Length: 185
Image (cartoon, rainbow, N blue to C red; front, side):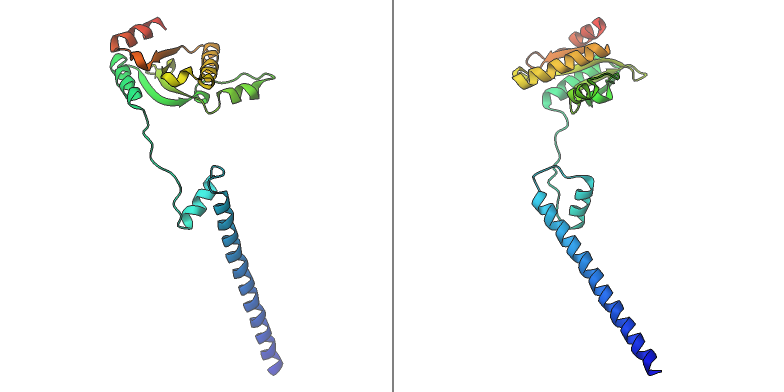
């Protein structure tokens, strides 16, 4: 019976060693992952997995609440709602949600041209078909990079057959002016 007891002790000993090794690997992996995340912090945007790990580790992600619309955009939104009561007004819409790109040799370049670009407002008919797109231009639209971005928007919406109406923030349109511009589209 003694040899069986020695075998049992050997098995228990090996199990204990395996448990310690597995625990060490798991703890070491978690610590390494945390160190890697801390090294990457601020150097790139975090993906969903990183955020979950950071939150699970007790760190607070660097997010804050933003104002959805600027004051001039809020003013225009209210005027659009008043001027166009039967229409659906959407704010801050991605161009990719509004414009498709036909297959061609430069499809990816054209897709990149509208990627990460948004329009201030989309005016939809009651059936949610797009009637027009509204841009509220402030003085920043006079910068060369914004002029280029606005040119891309102008070309893309013209090609897609979607009217693009631009209003200047320094001459905020009245409800009547909005109605007049929309009847012209």
